[in-house]
Length: 146
Image 1: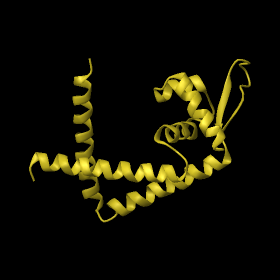
Image 2 (image 1 turned 180 degrees about the vertical axis):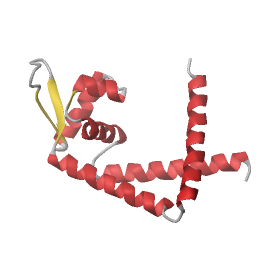
Image 3 (image 1 turned 60 degrees about the vertical axis):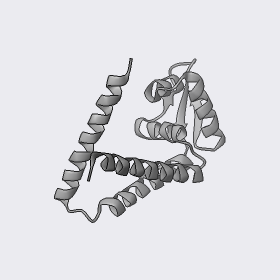
């Protein structure tokens, strides 16, 4: 297979995975930025909005909008910070925790469907090759930054 064909295959894979992810998220009333915020809270616990902005690389204004949307959807709530009167903590609701657990289970299931037919050595080889491609792409992107 030529280099260009490999790239076309990777682009097709990327597009298919992005389409699938967008569909799954939209069925739950989520967008990619909303889902990232939920996962950040899931892994890090309750957080101040400014800390979420820093962690996600978004402006504080954008985080406020995302949190407002997630509050309206019943995925997060705001509560007073226990030691900082000026701060508000954002935390997951039980509804969001259940959703994130279901999404994690779906992730494991999809991984099995995609790679379960490979033996451990083949998975290791594919994983190493894909990691190298990610490293090269990341380096090329970094080289293009001003």
